[in-house]
Length: 184
Image 1 (tube, rainbow, N blue to C red):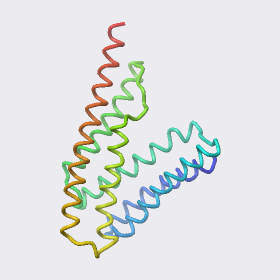
Image 2: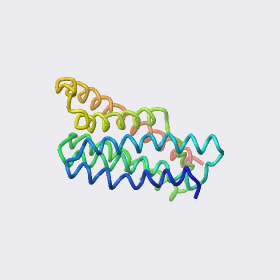
Image 3: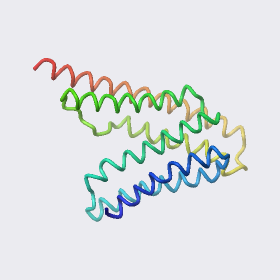
Image 4: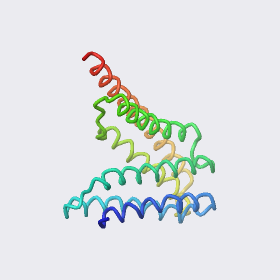
């Protein structure tokens, strides 16, 4: 196992720690673990590309670590009342639908492409930013409540929009690929 994969594995280990910190009410500490996990994602990618250490394991492990952290943080923030339940359900359902589509496509031997779409990258960035903003308000208690309320409302709207757009785009793409195979 090379250094980028070890860093990614460390990010996976940050998932239960972050969940525990949120559940125990240590949202400020959870913020810093979340930020460290985000920085580790950038570092492991940079090392892998720069030093030609991209591996098949890393190609699978990196997105699993990213999604595990995001989904776990969203579910935990929803369970503790920090995020609206409907938003958590939307975010998790989108990821489950994409994963289900990939699994179904493989099962049906469809040529399913796993490469992320640009809207998916925007969506992931928005989801990370929203989680960071929610956790940040506990890490930095001096931020004004009115500012947090407005920022949260904007981020929730952006995450909702990009999650729906990304999910529908993947659904459309999957339907197109299934239709193409069905006409052969």
